[in-house]
Image 1 (cartoon, rainbow, N blue to C red):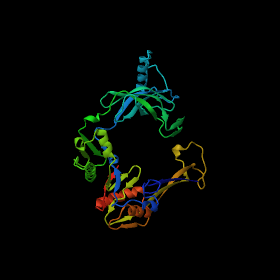
Image 2 (image 1 turned 120 degrees about the horizontal axis):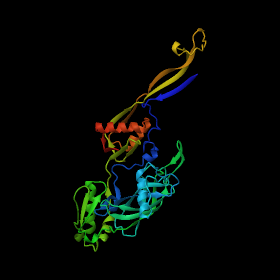
Image 3 (image 1 turned 180 degrees about the vertical axis):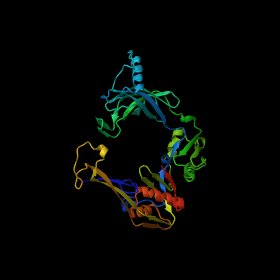
Image 4 (image 1 turned 30 degrees about the vertical axis):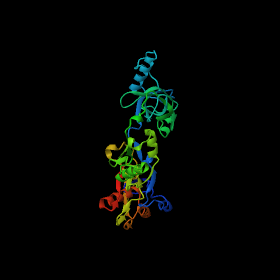
Length: 400
């Protein structure tokens, strides 16, 4: 009788370990990647924002009630204390030490306050459990104040939760799909404070670029000056472009912003590669260029196998209980079955795969070549980092 137990070393590489974005796509799709000389036509509104016109984050704390026994346990002390305080405001006094409930959960409530928000407008809110509740499914959020960074209350949230997942069962026999401790309430908050920005007092409209680039900033300034047939816009740096409101002779700032945001210009995205080592995702732009470089890729597979064989061994005299078990060739000594490990180590190093890229190779050729030699995402990360260190890559490498 043999009991087999396999232990595979981390050196074994399988395609299922990681996900390679773009490398696993068909070559027909990869060939559609734009070349480095192609500029993209975009509108100013797509690459900039207006300084002073932005969202504001709100956060609050509250209680979700009406759960089906999936709320916080008694060990979550702050939930019971919050419930006692809420009951006291309703005119009911309870002792936090004696309250035992399972259909209540303490939660944080978050929302984003858009610019030009007026009192009475509604916001979508996200509700997340704070304690050890199993699920918020079927719960109702009690009225909770949402505060901004300054501590002021800007909205009030309340309503029934919509869940994107569920949790069923108990103990080890539990099935959970997506997050059952996070839910949303569409239009669950009402704005109580006016936060609208007064644009009439703007003397200068400042455009802030999403991705800092001197070329794009100069292109925006040139497009605005050409639109108004005079110099009204100035690129201050790689992120900011200032436009003089008085110089444009527009009747209002909203009209000026609307006219500027509709302008179309050509921008060129920077050569950049983004790598997420946790998920094995690699995203490369089509304008990434490589110098002549050779890549040698070898695969080393190490497998350690342990088999357990059953053999009969004599029982030591001190552990002999007096019951003699006769074995072959030895009729006076007791024997017992013993598992003996038999370890086998197999090392298999495959032949090295070679790939060479010529001068001016682009991402299409790189992806196709790495995919052809069987490189996984983990291998590609190491290869790209080595090419960048060698100086053969004319692109920014960002590892997340």
